[in-house]
Image 1: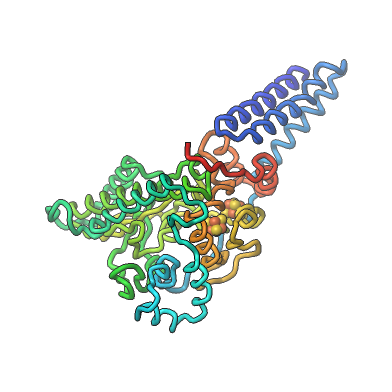
Image 2: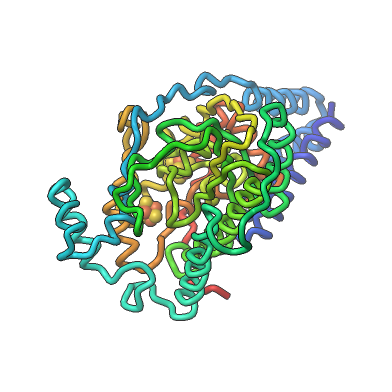
Length: 447
Ligand code: SF4
Ligand code: SF4
């Protein structure tokens, strides 16, 4: 039994030191110190029981206590495993998004028409219009080189817009024969593998739902045009944002990284759409500033994650630290049929890190409410966007502090597995993340 106690002490110590080493590699000094301390403190009782006492009883009691604690934590007691949250009952009008409202020009008929329909939004929108604006040289976090880099990436995304529907660039796609439904399995395997090879972080297929699509478009020359549902399938994928860059939110690196990943997602999406068109089917890429679908909802229904407190898609491996793009198509595909994972929403119920850290108080601290038929947390998008226009970046503080945003490595994978498996583990993980990682102050510099 003394040998067992010594072995247990060694396992606890080496686990603590391994976690400390991983934290050091992640440049999380505070967590490294805590893990090393926990490893030492945790190893002490079994080692002392084995070496100090002449009797075998203390070693037996300590080993038993440690095994019991591990068994309780690993026990799959998980009453909130399924989320029974409902889906939106109708479609959302893109003209109500902040990005569409931002494009309204005072004095134009479009501007007057919008605020005649929505007088309640006028005061809030005057708030963001009074601020310098996204990527403005007058914004609080203006940084010349960083903002220029972000603008360059956004300009490149814009250059992809004609390719989203297959217009321009490369001429007419040669048509293969009409796609056959019995090829759905092969098509799905091929297009998912190709998406991953092109650089997607995760990929899934959803059957198109009414609520995936905007009711009317709200950007550029499509403003006000009703959105048709032409395609029965939606291929959704994520690209991962670099944790180092997100760790600098809300300063310039965060918007550089957003723009870089929008461009990466856009380039992948237009290639996938063109590949499908060349197989004889219709396809439409939905990329930054050129969406007809609400990407987080499509991605959720394709099994890529759940919608958390901050209103973003929370993926299993990178949490909200992703960007999403979608390709809708009539090419026969097999839709994923994911079971809804209630553990994310349950974790968010106990964790309010994003709400506490949000500089504009846009993330609610309370419970989910029914909005448009769906249970969700109501984000104050006016307050969020007004803050963006003040600092000049897309902020990202909520993403930076989220416990799900940790890197995808062996340690955080083990923690996430525990969070999915056990209610008790989830309840412990929230305060421990606070203790180990603290408020995670941002570094400003890019280099
Ligand atoms: S992006 Fe910033 S302002 Fe917006 S919700 Fe997140 S933390 Fe708040
Ligand atoms: S910070 Fe916490 S509450 Fe907010 S989305 Fe992440 S897990 Fe949920």
